[in-house]
Amino acid sequence: MKRWLLILAGLALALAASAQESILDRLKAANTYETLQASFTQTRHSSMLTKDLKSEGRMVLASPDRIRWEVLKPYPSVFISSGELAIAGRRFRMPTEKDFTATALEGEDLAVKLVPVRRDLKSLFREIIVHADKQTLRIQSALLITPDGDWTQLEFKDLVVNRPVDAKLFEKQ
Image 1 (cartoon, rainbow, N blue to C red):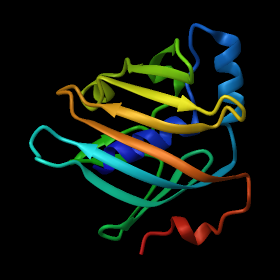
Image 2 (image 1 turned 90 degrees about the vertical axis):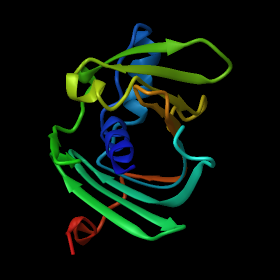
Image 3 (image 1 turned 45 degrees about the horizontal axis):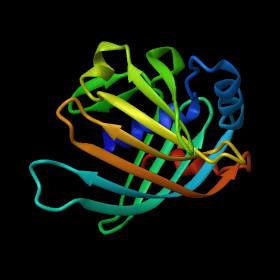
Image 4 (image 1 turned 180 degrees about the vertical axis):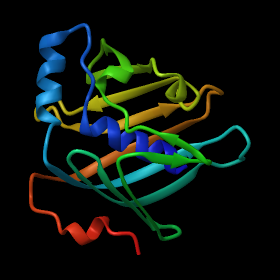
């Protein structure tokens, strides 16, 4: 479950560009920051489970690659990373915009479909669909779809951007 969260955090640090350069340039600019704090809700769907798993928490991102992902409900846990990610014994470099092809999606809202081009990311995701607020252009949600069709939906709220963050938040206990 943490792999989805970490990769998404990396994406939020460097939102990809797409065919509609003017829109995506604006999206990228609106989602570029030194620090970001937000609340999240997560819904994880797996074909192996009879019911979706739901959780809530807080995340803190600091440029270029520091992440604190804290699940508050239903079971408290904290994950902290700087730089490389270790998932199931494998090491992953934090993704950047060049690791995905991006396509702006037509519709009522502002959405971008990201498809991984890096082999290690392809093993984790078939695609990621990121939705942004039309007014602020800030990322509101992301749908992460695995190669087998399972998915995780992340919804973000209470975004706080470019406020000082205590460095101790990124220290592993």
